[in-house]
Structures are given as C-alpha cells and as structure tokens.
Amino acid sequence: MKTLLVLRHAKSSWDDSALDDHERPLNARGEKDAPRMGQRARDEGLCPELIISSDAVRARLTAAAMAAATGGQILLDARLYHASAAEIIAALKSLVQRDVATVMIVGHNPGLEQLIAQLTGEWEPLPTAALAQIALPIAQWSDLDTAIRGTLVALWTPKELR
Image 1: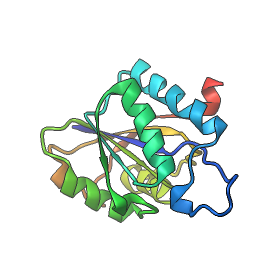
Image 2: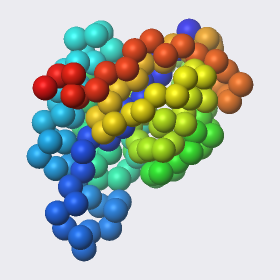
Image 3: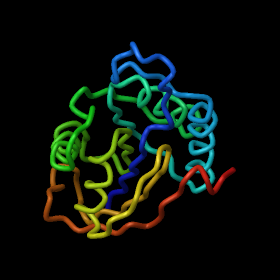
Image 4: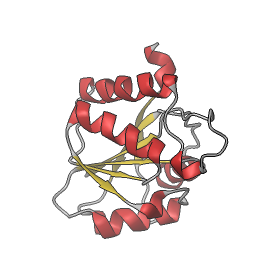
C-alpha cells in the first residue's frame, strides 16, 4: 500500500499583469494558507518522503512551505506544469523509487482534480491549497496506472483552518 498526497498550489497573485503565468508568486492569502496546510498535514501524521512539484513559482513556494512543516525532499518537475492526470501518473512512475511509501504531488488544476477522479472514481473540487490523501493498492510506484483504484481517505481545505 502506498500513500499519495495531492496538493494544489496555494492562492497566487495576479497583481503584476506583465508576469508570465509560470512566474506568478503567492498572494497574501496563499502565503498564509501554504504553511497552515503543511501544519495540518503534519498534525495528521502525513509526512511525505518525496514532494514532487511543478516548477511554477506558486507551486514551488507551496511545496517549500509543505516541506518546512513535514520534511521531505522536494523534486521539481517541469512536466507537472498544467499536467493531465495521465502525465502526473507517468511522472510518478518514472521518478519515485519503490521503497518510498508516501509521495506528495504539488501542481495545478484541472489535472489534479482529474487525477483524484481517475485514481478514486470520486470527483472532488480542489480549491487552492487543498490537500487530498489517497491510499493506493500498489506495492511499488511503477505499478501505478490509470486502471488502479485507490481510496480517497481525506480532503482538507484551508477554509476549514481559518
């Protein structure tokens, strides 16, 4: 059994319209929500060994806040920037070593919502900084594919923590 944590990046800033989408930082709410969600993950005993993040600024900053709260090594992957569910699964299969029990993906919608639906059969909205926990019936990450059906164990949103 493996645990996949799915974290949508925290709220980003639209203050500078000249910035490319990839370069947008977190706004004030995102800067508060990212550490809160990290604390929530730690309180729930969810400490990923590996955090795989989109290389977009808002995702990197969210991943850094999560790592500060829970530990875990951050690995940036440009493939996760606006990735589909299939692309996220491919990244997991290629990047995660078999002995890693808990992995976190930090990325973007709609791909993350699609990933949760693909792996659990449940469609859940994933607002910014929301965290989902999925239990996967696999022995190693290379076994993961679109036919695997996991269980959505929990979903937390920053709104619950305000």
